[in-house]
Image 1 (cartoon, rainbow, N blue to C red):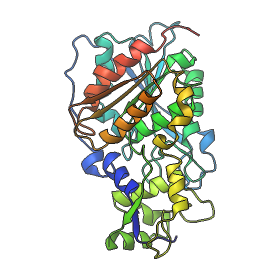
Image 2: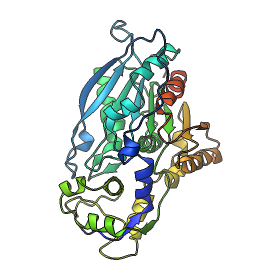
Image 3: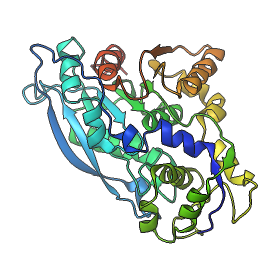
Image 4: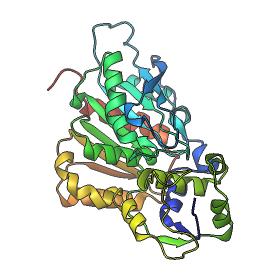
Amino acid sequence: MKLAKLFPIAAVVLFVAVAAAPAFGQVRTEVPPVEANAKPVTADRIRIHGKALEGNLEGDAVDRDVIVYLPPSYATERNRRYPVLYALHGYSVGAEQWSKEIHVPQTIEGAFARGANEMIVVVPDSKTLHNGSMYSSSVTTGDFEQYIAHDVVAYVDAHYRTIPLRRSRGLVGHSMGGYGATRIGMKHPDVFGTLYIMSPCCLSPRQARPLTPENAQALASVTTTADAAKLPGTLRSLLAGAAAWSPNPKNPPLYLDLPFTGSDTVPRQDVLARWAANAPLAFADQYIGNLRQYNGISIDVGDQDPLRIDAGKLHDAFDRYGLVHTFEVYPGTHTSAMGVRFQNFVMPFFSRRLCTHECE
């Protein structure tokens, strides 16, 4: 694999904003108080086959772990059907770890105890060889966009008592998952009816800057996927972006193109253009009609989160078109308030917006 001496700013953004290192990925987040009289939810740990992931060049798992949280009444009210919230984790953490960081099932139980309508909550795992799929469509990682929007939804509708209608399905994600919710939400209003974007990463097209000699040497040493797995978080996040946004089936062993070539110090504009084509702020104008179909859209971000700038730009883009949505900058960092936000803001938002009966 030909690697060299430029390091895209996008990789820095992926590293800092989507929690590539333990200092970010394995975090302590604020825990809301346990709600009195909260009833327990049931967690089903299952695997869902990804038709859209078959044949991916990285060799990422096609049968993926998924956690399905069933509301308290699910086991007893056997004729009742429920709306479904699909929740997308961020970079490097996976479904199990993110569940701990947003303190589910406690926060789901707490939301119900505080008056939110009962719903099923589904958390699919989208970790890959380089720690994150970016919820994108790539021959290298597999088509995670279709996996979420089609394979997971179809399986859940077939195996659980859902209300199988778009207005009874919600999509939320944090960080890389916020990017995923933005991207998938823009493209699949036929599947989802309500959208919540938490601290989204990777919204803007990026340029390139010099790579340190140490990182250049580390990248140059990669000749196998095992070598790639030993790289530090900054470089693994770079590879994750490249695998998702600039795949190359003729460039083994990682089957991706980086935004530089050999020892050249000039960025590869063709690769940067492919990355830019996957930046929601570059393609949002094309999907405003789709976004108008949503019953509700919300964006939030912490005031100490470096991603607040791009989150604000997404809000501004929606405002330009008069797209009805809410936008909040709350006190907190990129990860500090995830549990509180999930219980006290995300779940109530979907409770108000998702149809709890067959409304279409």
